[in-house]
Image (tube, rainbow, N blue to C red; front, side):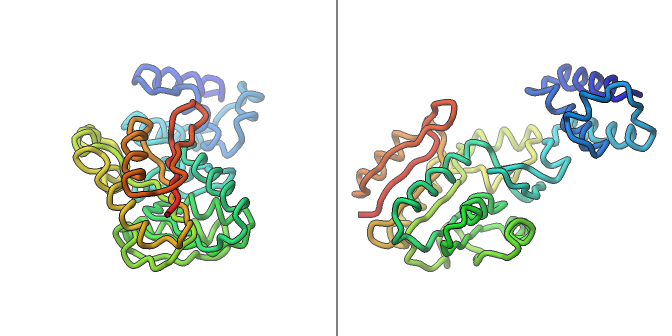
Length: 279
């Protein structure tokens, strides 16, 4: 089978299965299968795959058709220009979360007194590792309730930073310490009913990283309360959220007296990151 034919086969299969990005998924998997970049795939369409590469590619096609995300199949996901290891123990980093990192770095660089940053619900560690890669010399730490997620976190720290950031296992900020100058988090924010439906349909990501309670805001409410006790005076809380939750979270911060509460939009213009400052 030629490279061009293999690409068409993957694209056709994914399109028939209703995948959102059939050509991109086929291209990424094929490039990985032949251990070349995407440009090579386009430039060498008449080259033969060979039996070993063809078998490996067919295996990846089967996994994708079974609903496994491309990132889990490849065991990696690019985030903020960094290559993170991912598997079913953690949520796959999304491009929208890069907005949180950009916002955090903007605040940190404008507030030179800020030194201690903690990331709750860290998962892969994409947020604190990306911040650490900014080279500001900040003191970063992280926490997660999942021991399995922290295994992935440690691996990514070692692979990307060459060292493992301080971390604790705990629910939100329990045992994290402080006071911190900034707390970041991408907490679970799906409604429990939606999360159950997704998991029952075969969604592969861990429910613990998705389920935000009956209205999707249960974890956020606790995070706001705990952050107020763990932040230094004038410290910042940054949370990723569903755009539909922005008004409710901003109202929550307002009732608790948080200052400078605002929503930051992602590239699609949706309110994605909520920022508040401890009074």
